[in-house]
Amino acid sequence: MSPRNIGLVFKKDLKSYFNSFIAYAVIAIFLAVTGYLFSNLLASFSVLSLQAHANPMVAKQYNLLNVNETVVRPLFGNISMVMLLMLPLLTMKLLADEKKSGTMELLLTYPVRDAEVVLGKFLACLTVFAAMLLSTISYPILLINLGEPEVLPMITGYVGLFLLGAAFISLGIFTSSLTENQIIAGSLSIGILFCFWLMSYSTAFLSPDVGQIISYLAINEHLESLAKGVVDTEDIIYFLIFTVLFLFLTLRSLESKRWR
Amino acid sequence: MIEVEDLTKSYGSHLGIDGLTFSAQKGETIGFLGPNGAGKTTTMRILTCFFPATSGKAVVAGYDCFEDSFEVRKRVGYLPESVPLYGDMIVDDYLAFVAGIKGVESKAVKQTVTRTMGDCGLDAVAGRPIRELSKGYRQRVGLAQALVNDPEILILDEPTNGLDPKQIKEIRKLISALAQQRTIILSTHILPEVSMVCERVVIINKGKLVAVDSPENLTANQRDSSRIFLRIAGDGEQIIKALREIKGLKKVDPAPAADGGNAFIVELADGADGEQSILPIIVSNSWKLTEMRSVETSLEDVFIQLVTEEDGV
Image 1 (cartoon, helix red, strand yellow):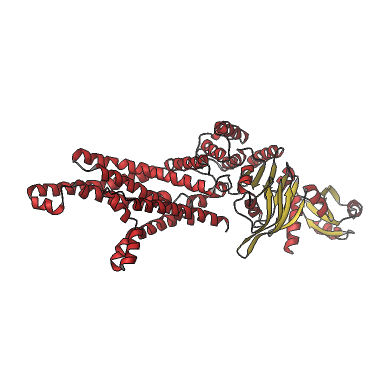
Image 2: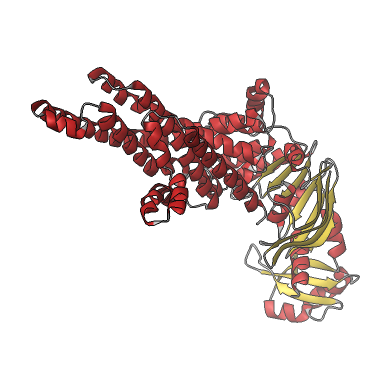
């Protein structure tokens, strides 16, 4: 693989995100929604804090004095849900649009390997996502200024969100490789991600062994411990395997298209 | 430079191309002709390694299109029929991207892009997004991306499609200039273009090879009759009736005449002497002959004849 070719595809797709204003629109909407959710969490924390100040029993009941538990963890949960709905909007065009417009025909006749194309596109999307995530950094900074939250869970939480985003993008590129219709690619991506998200809800109705497997496969379960500040290699490995698996499937999908 | 041997591509039960064999020498310009759906684009896509053939062999610049596709792709410039481009990219950025991907050294990219833009007449649209360009300029950008790394082989699928006559002339001139140093395969529906630009013609129909030869040989070999254009003043019906008596006549058809008079195309079997047969009839009827000339067989006639023969019409 040539790092130069990966870099060229990366640069082309990154420019395309900004030239077409997709990146600006998605980042702005992401910030507006997460900002609204953050302000709500902060407002409810402040109301409960006032109640706790008046009645110490309430504070004891809700463990209100811990800002990490009442604001930071729910915030990461909220951000991850917004990511689930918005990242497919970034990924759905990556290969579907190239196929629809016919540029894929030219791209695949250039001396560039499929893996270089997929990696370049993945990294371009990951960079836009990193910018999205970085733009939310003002929330924890505000919390640090207002209270005394633990910083480590915030850092591990952000690492978790980044890994989760990488996994979402990898799946999004895969669904984008399956069709030339962006809407189908986006819908498929959201649908599959919801399945990975919601599968943990069914563990209560399953046998313990199957439940354990389903619980391990559920994507949101692996963000939980990172949001608590617990770095478990099992979670990191899960996200990495998820990402690599769908990038690999994207390559196979591109390869199979050549044979049809 | 290009060797195609018994090449077949199937799409399920349908055969896109069926046992195609032809070759192109270094520096040769080949015209690739065939009706819509004949398999021209399929062949070009195999030669550019977009997809592999189902069976057979395609060797480009000494490399097998399937085994060494990467080496082939380094040496081929391809312009697909639809000229797919990234609309949101700036012309210069797009060509710099293609130059980089095609292996032009980083230091030389800017110079290469400037030279290619000059060669393709793109200086006027430098710095503009591709989506804002006219059809003619988009076609030139498509040609520029095929040329940017100075490839040994150019495969152009209908490069003058949709252009106005002035643009067609310019692109044709550019292709003729390029043809001096490169092997070119050119697919087009404009048959006079092939006669002007190409040294050899490959005609395919329904995925099968119909003919391979120079445009001159094709027109000479296909000629089994001679045609004469006549313009005669007088009663049209009477003239046709008299012309039908000519010895060796295959057919006589009315032809459009610029002044609205009577014009005919008389087709005679090869070997029949047109002047000796026609002139006495005109003299004996005292008609006024205003024009008489032989009609050359065009590549278009040959193409239609070969394709309809294949179709069994």
